[in-house]
Image (tube, rainbow, N blue to C red; front, side, top):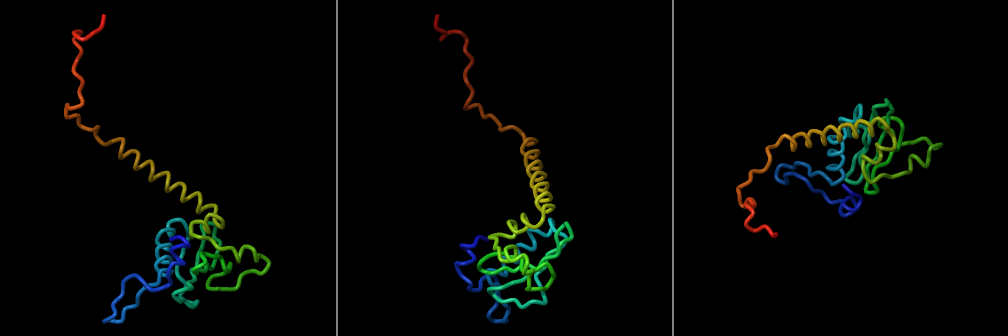
Length: 161
């Protein structure tokens, strides 16, 4: 989801039931849940923090990269940000202020910066999927010719001399 969509509205959307009191999900919650599902195969673990407070405008995720590094990630209307190198912690290293104050539009951009193995795994998965799609299209039968595009054989009658 792009920043434009994220900034467009912080109102609740998603499914919910007013009659039974079920909670509707905010756009950020939907984005966070989608991100967890989409990148889970390319990290050791990722989950929405159950310890840090969560609002419709602020969500924290805990992330362990394939390199074994730990991060607490903040998702707000501004984007994705590494807020700490510890799980369930909002306080980053003040010596790395530029790193902890940088926002990314997507979780993919953030992972691309912090995890070279993510980049490699993602590229490998994409290549494998493209090969699979290519082999599927290569093995499909050629289109049937119904005869409407056939040229009549030239028996020499129309040949210029």
